[in-house]
Image 1: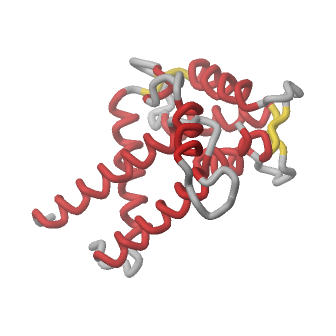
Image 2 (image 1 turned 30 degrees about the vertical axis):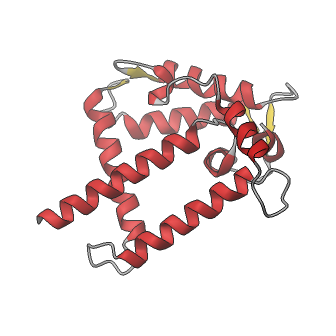
Length: 187
């Protein structure tokens, strides 16, 4: 792999990590939460139950626990992150030539900017006010670390399930044990 390719991959990785961290701070807001909801809503009925959340946690854990020993080690997490970076790179490499052009990067940046603008423009008037920015900042305050929900060391299925159910409870604003896309969007 030549130096230019390594630099491009490093730049894309940094941009992806930064974008993911910014999107994740809201935990319940934005497209990331909606994508998670869609993955958990396997029967596409617009609802996610605690059983769905537990199944999601178990499936995610199984994907991460590559040697099936019941724990996810640092090396397994590192391999998972490398796989995600390679998948992001492949999505951005629209012509499949192993390189990302300036046009590819601009298209990705434009799409991210449009999603962020839509999240910030709370009243849908086509403008972002200082009040809307402050509202978003207020919603982000008080949320913990991103890294595996603050879990350190090996991750077990039980830890993963606790993490998913904690997020589920926070999003289940009416407390009925079922998430709807409206609850996810409005959190």
